[in-house]
Length: 340
Image (cartoon, rainbow, N blue to C red; front, top):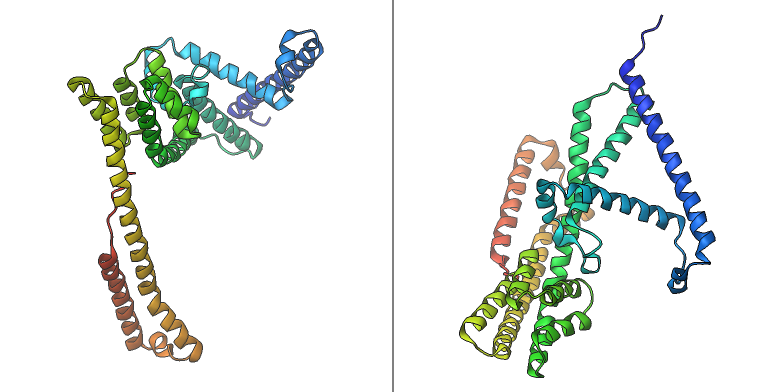
């Protein structure tokens, strides 16, 4: 009698149960969606809805509800609450009351489990040996991939915030000149601008509405994005609170300082472009000369390839060319301090 591979059999049973569960889950969702559509005509909520949810949107909402409910359960534990705080900065202001940092922790766990599940199914189909160490590595890799994606997206956001920061200073300064309050000045910024900078000023506006001081709100802004100009704003507001200066004078000084920084950086960037152009020309000149010689006479470089002396000479030329590149790079190198 043939020996039964109990380990493989157990995995097959588990996969079969999961597949059956998923089929029941989707059938239930589809039936619920049909019932909602049937009774939606008698509901007042549909009067305010422009379009009905599609099947995929409905599934997405159900899955997100599952994630959020599981995150609520994890929030009962202090370690998960503390761990979820590091993901608060990734939450857009419009979803501030719908999403919390622990939701991202749950998504990381689910991502890891899905990848492991796919690997298990693949091994069962191909009758490969079950290696738990590989599954652990796959889980950890897929668990951290969510962090990598969030960081890439957040770095892009910081770049956009840094680019539009000077505009916010101008709007706030003009608001203070016209006699507006701090809350109204921040409100003008979030309504006048769009994108990532508007999202951050929405958070500042919410903090102010909850009773935080302007210094605390901008300090929280700095802790999220870690941009030096914002730290300068926080220090300036702190001086304002201690010295009793006019806030208009403070923001006039910040605007002037940022304008000077922009002029300096524009000059540096112009010099950098010129340096890069000269560097590329100097770098490509030997390659162009070699290409022209090769086109005119294809046998010209044969001694460098087919003789020992020629090969040694060729190595010397390549070494000199690399040294040439390093020297040219040092000559045209320009350091930039990206303060804007």
